[in-house]
Length: 99
Picture 1: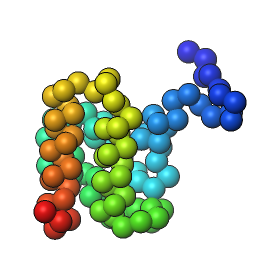
Picture 2: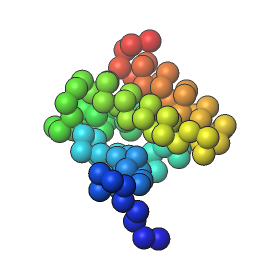
Picture 3: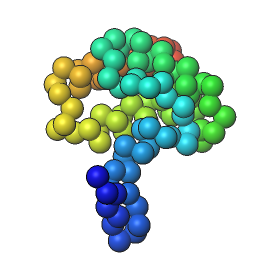
Picture 4: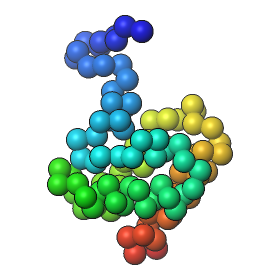
């Protein structure tokens, strides 16, 4: 499929590029497709704490990436996976001691 460009010369699938090639976090492959909320949270926490490119706290970076993915997936995200990712937010809060 040819890459379509908009008037600002940005790829149409910029959100996919953000999640796959985040400049702030190096994410494990497929992290948002896993079915274990605690595993997702641990992975995001590990990625955020290991990053030397993020511009905010590890907690904020990890939660932002998770929220970004859920919001951008929108109606294409099936209900079961949306539930897993919403529970991962709770697990991420616990992992950072913010529950």
